[in-house]
Amino acid sequence: MKSPYHQNKNINTSKVNSIAKYAGLGTQLIAGLLISLFIGKKADSFFAWHNMAAWILPSFFILITLVKVVRDTQKPS
Picture 1 (spheres, rainbow, N blue to C red):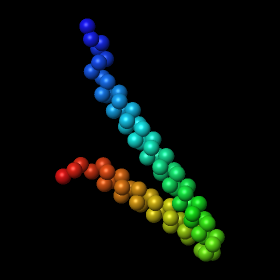
Picture 2 (cartoon, helix red, strand yellow; picture 1 turned 135 degrees about the vertical axis):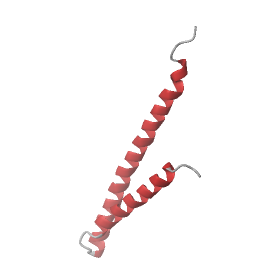
Picture 3 (spheres, rainbow, N blue to C red; picture 1 turned 120 degrees about the vertical axis):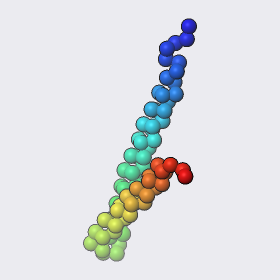
Picture 4 (tube, rainbow, N blue to C red; picture 1 turned 30 degrees about the vertical axis):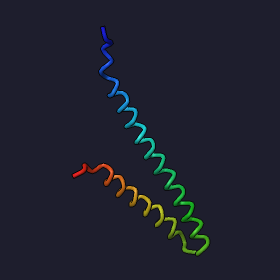
């Protein structure tokens, strides 16, 4: 007799893959924001812009990431 759990193998792996996708996306967001903030701070100190680049670069990164997420999650037509 087969185990009652033999049909649920795909469900468990899809949950793990889904969690891994979201964890990867979260890590990418945090790393990207930290890097863009660091580069913005360095650009501000080099050009004496008074924190303009420290706001613009992370905002630009968030905008590009949101566009990428929307494009990736749209159903193909």
